[in-house]
Length: 384
Ligand SMILES: NC(=O)c1ccc[n+]([C@@H]2O[C@H](COP(=O)([O-])OP(=O)(O)OC[C@H]3O[C@@H](n4cnc5c(N)ncnc54)[C@H](O)[C@@H]3O)[C@@H](O)[C@H]2O)c1
Image (cartoon, rainbow, N blue to C red):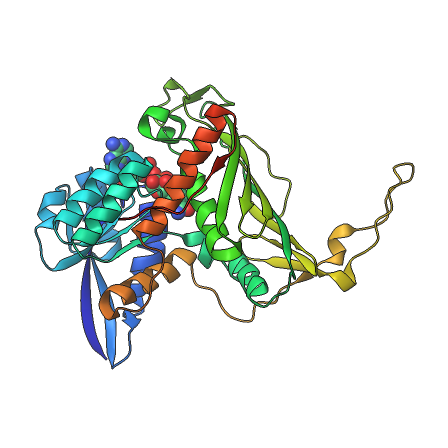
């Protein structure tokens, strides 16, 4: 098969997401399998150009994965016409400026969420990308998780009847950094560095609702900074200025009521770090990262309220697994392959910068709702 090389500038690959999900679990395995079959006897073969702030870390990554180009100069990479795609997994605060430079250099854009730290910034990128007539994409990895794909197939097959409500639980305990190292970077807990769970997670809620259940129409949110002091990567105490938990309710199109609880200050007593329960007139389902369980109306038990006796009923046994009728690749890799095909062959890719801006819109409106202590409507974005 003929090999068609596609050059990708990858910025922020020394970070948690950039190194693990995007490089090691997506681009490297695609290279190892010889590329992506795009039909016509051709394979699309990604050639990364690694960009970051630390020469030694980049050098180590390049050696580990057999990558020939790396640099601490973004300008050097942007000037090279062999690299047609710019990918960004830097901190949220660093993204907008770098993406803007890449658009001006004529590169196609693929980036992590949130696409910018403000709706105004996100919309400016959307408009600039349109002016320069380039292709764009944003990471919406949760859509490609097996559990969520099973949930989506239930929705598409009419399993639920009329969907009534959605209830999501996300979170886990993030250690403070003193007696155990924190699992997340310290900038996540600093408002001044565009940290905070609302800006981080509500992009996910937006695309999950919009693409799996129904369009978001209204948001009401309350957040908090529950652990005010944490310890950073260098062992120094710092003030946490950003929200580390947020409970939000939403109205979705069709009158569906949704609730999402997000917290980095909770201990897990559920089947997964993210679970979504959908209740409908004909059935209910609970999706996690890989699995999805259902209970049809005909399998619904009749609960009896009696706290005076020990309950003998195992409620979890009333649910059935949606089977794994196919194999599932890493969610980030699946989306990467879709985006690379889109750039090379013009195949459809709906998760563009405008869709990313909708995620930022929801985060911004949730923050507004919290600070003004009121519900906020979420209108369609004006993109022109
Ligand atoms: N899709 C998802 O599920 C998911 C999950 C976690 C994080 N993210 C997003 O990915 C992005 C990166 O998150 P992460 O957890 O990998 O962060 P990280 O701190 O581990 O990595 C950040 C990267 O940005 C670089 N960087 C550039 N300028 C920087 C600066 N001024 N200060 C610090 N680092 C700087 C770092 O060198 C590093 O490579 C964030 O925007 C975050 O919202 C997405």
